[in-house]
Image 1 (cartoon, rainbow, N blue to C red):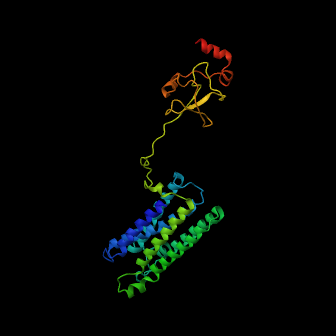
Image 2 (image 1 turned 90 degrees about the vertical axis):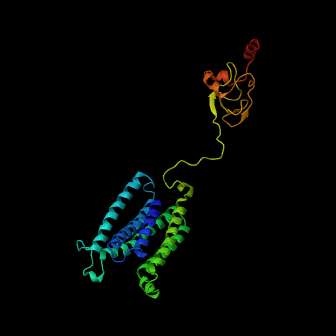
Image 3 (image 1 turned 180 degrees about the horizontal axis):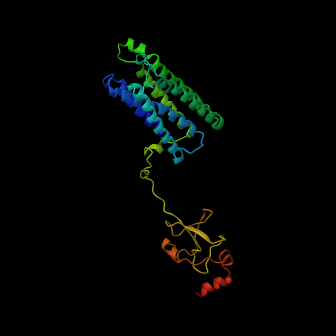
Length: 307
């Protein structure tokens, strides 16, 4: 979707240049700018089809397997379409230009600029409806999709059919492309909303503009890690109720132990034995189950008394 919005921004930039009376009409620069503008429009609608294809989850979005074919196809289509439009304007080979030139008719330009958007929108609508109904079982994105398709269809009508009457009625002040640009912007916003609703994406993911910058530092305190050790008690001592003698020490509290069951027990000899994390390097080997799982018997108690 970021590539679609980027191409859309470039497309509108060149559209302002070739339709905004900034450059001299009929100049060579207008031919170049218009060729680039129409080429960006061509790959914009191809990118829309690619987004619909990615919604099928055949390949994962954002991976090399999806980005490499997309950008390779973009480059091929852009170079090829720019050549066709330049040849149409400059009549280099006379293959794509209008015959005769006064008729201003080019089947290639008509197909790529007018027919191709409707074909790509139809394919994208079919893929989106398939994913929405058959896979997700949602109806709301379909309603928004229909609104977007109707909006962009009206925009194309204003651009290619109603532009001449509007231009004549306004004394060449404004034409249909101005209204079409506004309607296209609304339709693109609806397409983005459909994509967000289908993928349930969070816009926080795009704070780094897709460059993968590390997240900003958080104001929440960082919790100290807990250390898991075996038999932290001194020799001949054990804790009742723990078959394997495994305990988790919270470094923030020397007198409490977090058991695997997340229950805090008070060690009976916590005042005579230091449980700081530095003592983890001097741990005793794991005791046998018969020495670590049962309460202290009389024999062990007598040994402790003699010590």
